[in-house]
Length: 422
Image 1 (cartoon, rainbow, N blue to C red):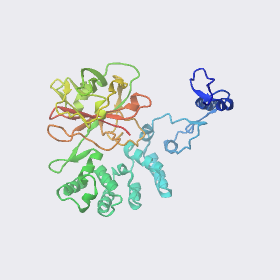
Image 2 (cartoon, rainbow, N blue to C red; image 1 turned 30 degrees about the vertical axis):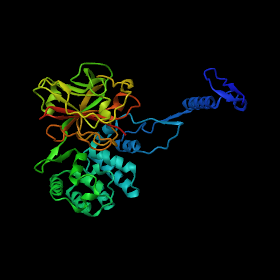
Image 3 (cartoon, helix red, strand yellow; image 1 turned 90 degrees about the vertical axis):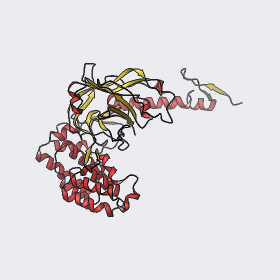
Image 4 (cartoon, helix red, strand yellow; image 1 turned 120 degrees about the vertical axis):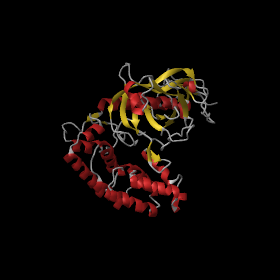
């Protein structure tokens, strides 16, 4: 039998070989590694430099360049972020500054197409009114389609070039279809309607019908071939509350009733009162609730509710229990209640891409799809439901991820929730 001794660390119960004890001054290898980790962390904390590239810089164009600058990771350096939110830096630019930023973007594209270039293109598209026509023509010329959202405000010649390419560029067809969906003008809507009635030869190469790409950009074809938006234009940014206070938007509140599937208390993912009801043509209600189970909605494709003329909701009989549900849901940490507050209006497109440097909790606007668009179908009328609200767990809990989404079909008094994460 091999002789072993106790680790010298009184808080450790490991038994170790004599040779290990001799080599490590009586400590086991896990304790040796933990001591080394703590020493390294203490050294980094004591000696790490703080570097502020933004100090003294007032030109928003130069600030944008620094925001998107790629910095090599160095544990001995803490890069101080810009004190102004990125979306506010872009929004502060005048026409001359936007033109300079666009010229800088063209230079990046011309020298070396990069992730940084498309980050700037996305921000210019959704945070500003910048004219990106020359950049989009460059993307067409060099077949740069991997960020289709930037084509949203394309001029007609870029749109027509995309329409020509979709038939012949099979390698980029998915991205081209998404780019067309983001343009979404009358010409695109008519084209998608034509494809719905007379599918193109390449339809079978896709996983979904070509006209269904429109949902990634927040719209779909109606029964008569018209564009039907799946979002509300009015959009309110939501931020974490510093203290509890009465609100007309209540994000996450516990209910008295229980989930029929897991027996946990249901929650109202959101409750609206006062002026916010008018956003969604719910003026006849005193309040409006979207209820769900915060655990089961993460495993079910959709959790439905129905609301009455007072705006109270209850569990819908249309809900279908998923094949798998966790058996430890009662041990999950519950979402904090009444955790968000309104922080002003913003563009409905401000958070439409998870690649945008912004916060994502909001009322109205386009949803931030993490895994791809998934608008629920109303179980009664079978129409795609309208997006109404989302809460990003990262906005309310440190080291969390995932987004809860809420939807409405006002004709059928039906709500739905779903959840996505990376």
